[in-house]
Image (tube, rainbow, N blue to C red; front, side):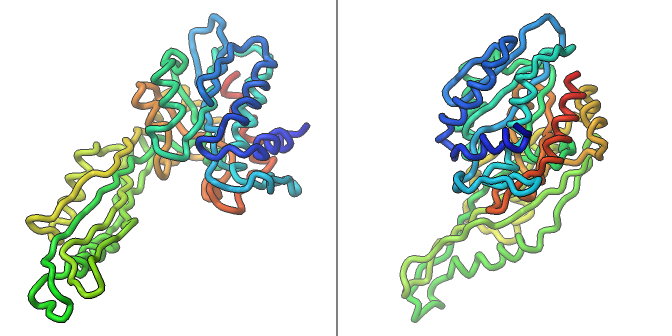
Amino acid sequence: MSRLDDALALVAVESVSRHESAIATLVESRLRTNAALDVERIGDNVVARTTGFHSTRLLIAGHLDTVPGDASTAQIVGDQLRGVGACDMKGSVAVMVELATNPAPRSVEVTWVFYAREEIAHSESGLTEIAELRPDLLVADVAVLGEPTGGAVEAGCQGSLRMSIELRGTRAHTARPFTGRNAIHRLGALLERVSNYQPRVVVIDGVQFVEQLQAVSVEGGVAANVVPDSARCTLNHRVAPDRSRDQAVAWLEDYLRDCLEVGDVMEVVDWAPSAPPQMTNERLMTLARYTNQPVRGKVGWTDVATFAELGMPATNFGAGDPLLAHRSDEFVTLQELDEYARVLTEWLR
């Protein structure tokens, strides 16, 4: 079978978040063909480890779940594998399984982690589940996460801050609006302020991160004949690794200060921490050199931040164009899988 066929076998298995049992079983069965691996199943997560006497341990991780889609449409067309999860990230997972089952000796120990529920709330992540139940399985010197990066190293990740903002007004009859104050109208100035945001650019360890700010929901209104006394919006702020949660919140409060008044309420709905690029780490620098591509900052949040919380240097490196992730025409090419396998093989050697 070719690499595309191996990947197709995974893409053809439906594994929308919370429904990864079948694909975890398939991956587990393949890993057990290598007697040199210690394979453990934790829920719908599978961990395989070499247990020799080398002093260095590398960890390579990939998630098994996809966003919703029809797995039955998966197909190979020419040199492309098309289907939900082909790029994000079953193509890379197929290469990981291939390399994990290769009995060739290496000068390092390797841990392969295949985990569930990455595409939904971080609190449900299979990686977090492993960290809680079997933290010993995640001990390593450095980690690589196979998120699609176009075959380049995308270092670190941005934090994600979600803020709810409630603006207050005074309720009145719509026939006599001058006796009240329309809270929805007040949102106009705030949304204009958000739409005029100019992204902040930060360079850390030579890696560039570009922050973003977007309004993602708006709600308000009481009845068709009532001037509303409350209106809400939710903002999503992508935060560079040089800012903590508190610093990001303080900046956003200051940025919107002219649109806020006494009685308005801002509260944090969700925060996913960022991760620094870690590109001073020798192992990650070596990986980047093998790609023959410049290092980029990761756009968005990934589980590199989870590894950072565990105290482990980590980076993103995977096959496939990240701009294709979650799209209906998602695909990965044979050339991309071959190149991904080449770089990982050289790095592990």
